[in-house]
Length: 260
Image 1 (cartoon, rainbow, N blue to C red):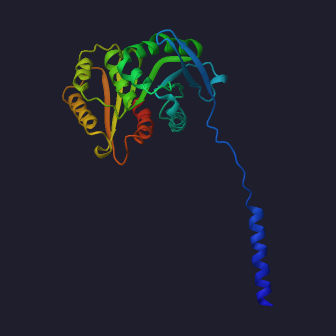
Image 2: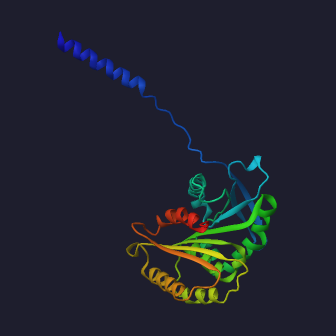
Image 3: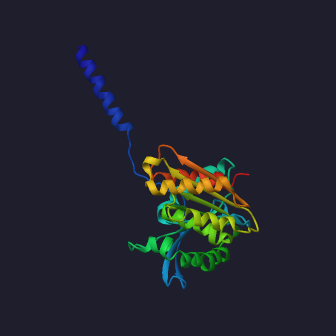
């Protein structure tokens, strides 16, 4: 009799457990972004731009700083989440996020960020930024984020055309053969207003050796004779790889860029 009662109780518990475990699927929605097919005269091609507007944008009349993301198709989602968390903590203001997507061709990214970087910079400065400022309530305060080759583009842009952005976040930039030239350009700048640079590398074993040594050379030059009107911070991300470094650098870089 005891065995029968025990079996009955066990069966009842199993039926109750099955009834209690209702499994459904739901989409994870982090926000909405406006997708824009942007015809560039400078580049002579259409580029896909995604624009995320901060919460409360439609109900306000204020202007917002902008965060421009290179490799936008990869970084938009975690940029939105990182921005929200920092905003909740009062570390940064609400901002408009502009993601510049890459073309699908194999050589397109290398052309934009290295071989034809002057033309890509012209596209940003003379076409994209004026369009964003005219279409959305963006202020003149802007941040540029890039990883790997896009980080090289960001550092090079700071040295060559510093007026385009106020803050630069660069994760794992390959500066070999260019570290000293970029530094010399930074020394020669006569900046109207201060600029901020946050530049990182993953730990040495996880980065390409020449790129890591160039990073050390560049940061040593910055330390030995800091360029005027440039606030800079460097950091080696222990435990991170070249790929994972883009995530943590963007998160920490946003707080560093707006510090003070």
